[in-house]
Image 1 (cartoon, rainbow, N blue to C red):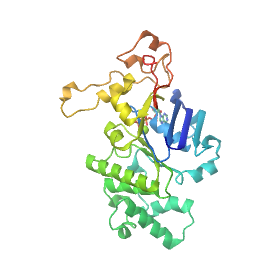
Image 2 (image 1 turned 180 degrees about the horizontal axis):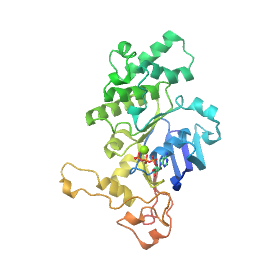
Image 3 (image 1 turned 90 degrees about the vertical axis):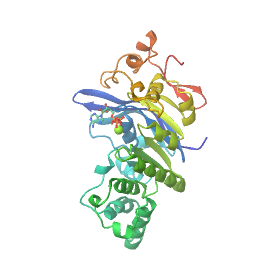
Image 4 (image 1 turned 45 degrees about the vertical axis):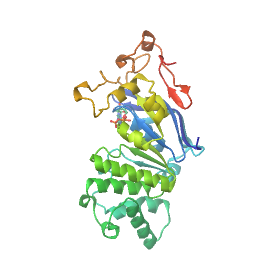
Length: 322
Ligand SMILES: Nc1ncnc2c1ncn2[C@@H]1O[C@H](COP(=O)(O)OP(=O)(O)OP(=O)(O)O)[C@@H](O)[C@H]1O
Ligand SMILES: [Mg+2]
């Protein structure tokens, strides 16, 4: 076991919308060790992005509010930090590659200026050293001819290059924790694989921890050490990657894995998960997955399961397993 870098305890983030209160994050607990990669997986809308935006306290304002829990980063509770103190942590100690990287670049500024921005706000470098640092970052993310590229605008780059620039911005201050929110969905598979390999290399060089949000179990298998499966605002299962792949316990995890295409299967046999996740504004009593669960029992519709450890480091929230 490594040393804990981040510990999220019973985090509750609610969104106060005109439609009512959405329990986007409803009692989530997990931890990330130094140098470790945690995968966060789950269907669209289950609360992955809101969980990670909560860590950085960058929630949609004033809709999103953290209403409970603790976020301990390097032994300090981030929820007790002021906005001014958070600004020193964001980009410097915890960085995030946002879900839609193509829109996180500003079309009006050169890529050099955009990489300089976080470096300028966290480090006091004079002009020539700043330029050196930007070129170093471009080299790190394998952009060729960085001296020339530094003056170019995002529209002059391919999608894969823009992705790497976004990576360079996030990594420019050597964060201890990088949160990558579906960083490759807009890229074709070869570029996806290259970007993932690059992130892994940089992770080893910087001794960085990562939270990798993804829909793709292929990425989880290649990149992550541990994985947490999220369903309607809660973590339903978490384990080491090998353990989770070999012995998935929660019916939702099993269903997600059943929904993976396999080469030898014909597409008609592909399992899908019937039904829709519950409305996070009107959660039913009992287990949130009960209405879609192929293994549901009567008790699941009235009692709420809690996350319990079944094997060493393997936790699950299911009344059938407990
Ligand atoms: N700005 C917002 N205003 C209102 N509701 C929001 C807002 N952002 C997210 N939500 C709601 O919060 C819930 C969790 O959203 P979140 O973006 O965390 O999902 P996700 O797991 O990241 O999904 P995806 O895989 O599609 O990115 C969803 O029900 C979503 O509709
Ligand atoms: Mg998301």
